Image (cartoon, rainbow, N blue to C red):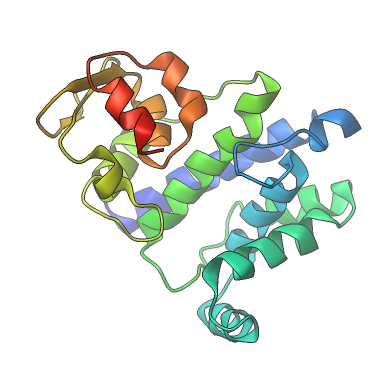
Length: 208
């Protein structure tokens, strides 16, 4: 997928998340997200942090916490999750046209918003369906990568088969389901397993 197409999907998903966040009440903002240890508010803060990030600020802030990546992301999630709701939403909306990003492939930013959007929505009983082409691009980028999220290790020796697209990957015991839920399972979101089936699901669950 071309860079411009990826950014189009990123901006579409950010707009969709803004529209979701605008509907939430205080109780929903405080609900635990699918990101372990973060509330919906803190997960939204993390999305905003990534959307506002630049390479220079990334390295500066990472160095400030001793190059501990998880400490770095946790600090920003809490910092931006603590700002006023209206300000968080306003700042995220301002990132629905910009193309700055941390020092990572742009496709990683698409995966970021696709997964964290569901980290926020699914615990609240909400569903959102990104475009199929966006999901295929994310799945293809992660199926052979262990960087940070460990997707390749998690799905090794399994055959993933989407039931709502022609996407598939791997060989071995089969895990089937909607592509969106397969992507969430690839990055360890066990809550997505309710949408999945197949002989390989038990093994996948042990790796999440």
